[in-house]
Every structure is written in structure tokens, then in C-alpha cells.
Length: 371
Image (tube, rainbow, N blue to C red; front, side):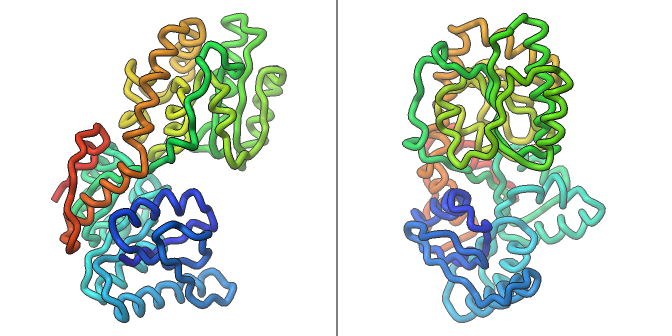
């Protein structure tokens, strides 16, 4: 398998997306900014000149040459621009199936933009397009994207990295927010939620933590000052490993307007944090209302506030949801992602690959394949 991708030196993202494939096939990863070694993955870097557009052009040409020179069974990629386009050309030249892994804004930004018709046409040229959840499958169908197959592909975690924490009633952080401070993730709304709980419930001792950084940090700090909740909201900045925050939190609150399936949600659930989330993107594939989470239709501030207030005073309900949430440790594991890859590669006819059916909820979701 040839993998055309670049994760800008993000070791964790490279391992999550390509590592499970190495459990199924023999991948060679072609990239401009190589990560450190990944078990079972050969990493190759084409020549670079230090000018990104030229480097990407060289990468694309190198992918074509590599496909012609060696006998690959398929070409995989992540993100349509530019890596998916390079993979599509290379696969067509070598007459082998092509895969596009949708991440970021491929669907919600590019496929729905003013240039959307060209994007949707390109996506329809792949043998298979993988997405992070079933909502994305339905959205592609509604947009008229018609590749050979559409399938969900697990964005996995290593469960050992997120050991179950202490009982939820003994954790010092009441509300936790983790992510990039950007408009689509709406971190300002989280500050509004904190302020309403402090004022409405008389929670002068409430402790909230926002882990992350980004372009909306100034707006977040301004809203904190506006509400006068500086004593309640901590901003530790970007943290490479937020595990210690998960282990000390009672509730994980998501405020995004647009999402695929946030890895921070899966990590928090694996640690045993009760999620309060909107029904956005593919969130409801993992956060099932009143089973593993409390889901707020539309993600309105009032709904998030009311749910958080109830859960903070109901230890039994919060504990039950937190314990149920930890089921993601199995359904979003590297083993589950490897099973997804088996189904995807078998569906496009890669020799020697046989799909398996593990019977898990995520595996059943992954079986949603459309002609």
C-alpha cells in the first residue's frame, strides 16, 4: 500500500491514521514532513526545495513515479487537498484502487463551498472514501458524492494511555473543555456556560478548565472578564498530553458548531469523564444520549447549562454515564481501526485481504457501505 499524506510532524495523528493500516497491509508512507518511526510503516520523503507549493508538486510527481516503479495494491490518502489529488492521479496512472480519508474540512468546508461541485466530482472518483462516522456517510450521500464505496474509519486511541480515573465524585475539576480555540469549536460559549452556572446555581466554588490555544484565545479572555469568572476558569494553554486533566474532571463539555468526531471526546470518555455534548457531526456515534452522555439537540447554551447543573448534583447518574462511556476503550481502539481497514480494502478488491465482523457497535457502523 502506498500512503500519500502529511501530518506536519504530528506524530500522534500519523500513528492513529496509518498505524492501524500496518496491522493489515504493508504500507509505505510518502510525505514532505516525515514523522518519527511508526511500527510496520516504511516512510519515504521526496526531495524538497523549501517552497511548499513546489514541494507538494514534487511529492505528487514522486507518488506517480513510485506507483509505476513498484507493484502497489492501492493508493491511500488523507485530506483531499493536496494529498488526495496526488493519490488519485498516481492510482489512475498505475491502474490501482484509490482511497481518500476525509479529515478536517473536506466535507463541511470544501464540498459545500462555491467550488463544491469540483470537490464533489473529485471525491466521487475514488474507489473508497472513508469518513469518521455515519453522519458523514449520510452527508456525502446528500451532497451527491458517489465514489465506489463510502465507509466509516475509526479514529482510534490507545486505551492504555487513558487509564480509568478515580470515582467521579472525588475529582476537583467540575467542567473541562479541551481543543483548539477556533470559531467552529466556539470556546466562548463554554465561558457563557460557566458564567450561567456560577450565577444561577450560586456555585462560587465551581472550577472549570479550558485546555488549548488558538486564534480565539483573546475572545475567550475578554468573555471571562465580561462575566467576571476569572476565579473560576483556568487557561493552562496548549498541553501535549491532557490526560491528567481528564483524570481530574467530572464533566467534559463540547461546544463545537462543526465537528467530524473530536478525538478529545473519545479520550475523555475512555478516562471515565461524563460528556455533555451537542448533536453535531458524528458525535452521536459515540455519545449516546442517556447511555454514555447527555446530548443537547442544537447545542444551545441553556441546554448545556441545565444538563451540567443536573449532573454536578447527581453523583449516581454522572457515575453511571461515566462508566458506560468507557466502552470506547474497545470500540475506538487500534484493533477496531485495523478491522475497519480490512473491510475497506476487501471492499475495493485488494488481494489477500478478508473482512472480519467483530460484532461491536463501531464495527457495525463501519459496515455502512454504499455503492
